[in-house]
Length: 382
Ligand SMILES: *Cc1c(COP(=O)(O)O)cnc(C)c1O
Image (cartoon, rainbow, N blue to C red; front, side, top):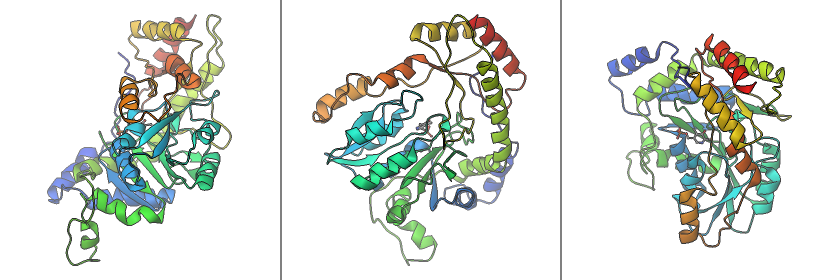
């Protein structure tokens, strides 16, 4: 069986966990947490990084920090993971869904502009497959309407927009270290705060609504309950694991890139008679971080046929998001809680990616199994 994803270990994960245990510091905000946070602050120039237990948690922190509540609107693409929208729904805000672009799955900036109302507070661009949204257009819209931009950079580690690292452009950004991402810690995530306005409160929300971080730095002489918050910080066991991955980030990225490029070269030189395949498009100004390799089929029938033929050869290829705007939860929620929010009947591009996109196995260690994937794909498509 060739899996769609397998977690890749660099070798030092358990050693660093053992070290954290031996040092007698296994709760959060210790040495490994600081190392990981500083790694991103230095490498990417992010103003402040806070490790979280997931990207979902980082999005929830961003939703709290953005100050949204009932009556406020947040623009989110429909073609994304649940958490990009759920974090804001939990704060009582109304999520308004935007369509993808016709030529790639990322959100269409022109669509965002059309959805802005006097109640809009936040835009959540999601960098699908680690490929940048048009951040110039999005920051421009946000600037003109005084909106907060929270990048969902869950898939976007080591990727750029016009030379700037993704996660460093919006007011805040959220990364994931879930086992399906490029750099992993099992479950894990990170909030990036680029805007000074949110810095102090971010740390407080992270530490269960207390000013404990300031106390440990000696800035206040006692700490207490000063705000809302939750237990968003991971234990040192998780950050020790993550640190072992970050030490090898360049190797991980170059191994993934080789696999991605081999897929791309193969499929761009291969035009099966039976179906016309679409390949990933990297727009001008964006980069490819080899998070994901996908193919676009002409319709649901041909994609389903491909997935089952690959499955018959013991290779797992998987489709991706079901549109959030027509999800069971959102249809019910919109009726009950947000009658003012327009439920789009269809977002045609989003619906099309939901039906036609398929992802191929891509992980460090795929090795010669990639030959089998390519041979099987050739057979399935002829
Ligand atoms: C993976 C992912 C998330 C959620 O990440 P977790 O760390 O599992 O919470 C959110 N948004 C996008 C776009 C993702 O790909």
